[in-house]
Length: 213
Image 1 (cartoon, rainbow, N blue to C red):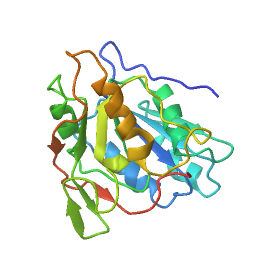
Image 2: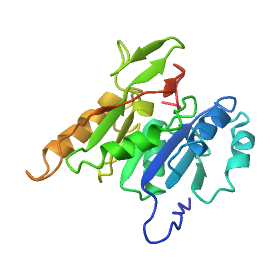
Image 3: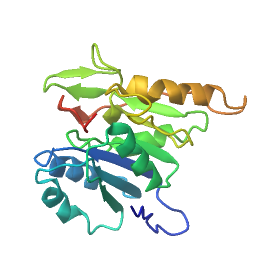
């Protein structure tokens, strides 16, 4: 599979947005619109279809002409780790953020993310989140780990585990702990694992799964 990387000029995009999707054609346009409505425009998107057989291709089609968008589709469902690793390979921005296709961001979400990373000692941040229509939390939703839609971090070489290594839909177990361990083992001048909480505003989670797992 070809993994094209966009040409953003000398500066390049500031943030890579990874959007895994599986059988969520009805939610996908809403998520994509929330990205296109960001006040920050120098992002790149890796939209990875994890083997959907619904109308995902048709739902995504109007957005694919934008040169900031990269698209890949698996012929069969391979799980969250494979989708996210493919997205990482398709992008190069120094900050990575996650927008599953059933979630959405407020227009200033990426602005807050990039403002937090102006501090060189910050490696990972998370937003507060609105979930299940009427709840808001500054951290992880009760009984759940930090969700993909909440988290952004500096790019590191560490990949997401794929099904052959670990099968789970828990991002804390899959990657957040692994990321923290990698960051903490960096040289003393390296950044700590976690940074500030950034505002939630309209960052929302629907409660549906974001990709096959």
